[in-house]
Length: 151
Image (cartoon, rainbow, N blue to C red):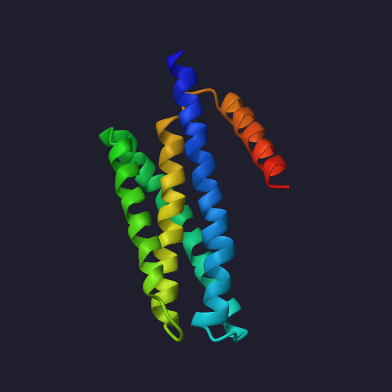
């Protein structure tokens, strides 16, 4: 019974985290960055794609290192709290980005993208002993219900 509750809570967290990432990073801020911050210039797309690529490369490099540190120090939940706090700060700082602030807009979005990936990584580390097939099945049902309710 205890594992079912943990699986369900993790599923809700993963659903919210993924939804947040898709909505904020992929749609809202990417469009805002190109149209407002970069002045609707084509170079805005280039800057955005470079920023996303850098975030993915850095994530690929540091995730195994941070995972090993978290495993060795038994501090997975502290890492999760730290990276979640950084994600909140990075996301809140996007509010202050205005037209022409390309450097700061990319810097804060890069911070947010990096941290968001680490939050997901550490949630996976924290719950890796749970039955992932069950989690994915529950998540698929939740996404299906959400998709049906939206349409």
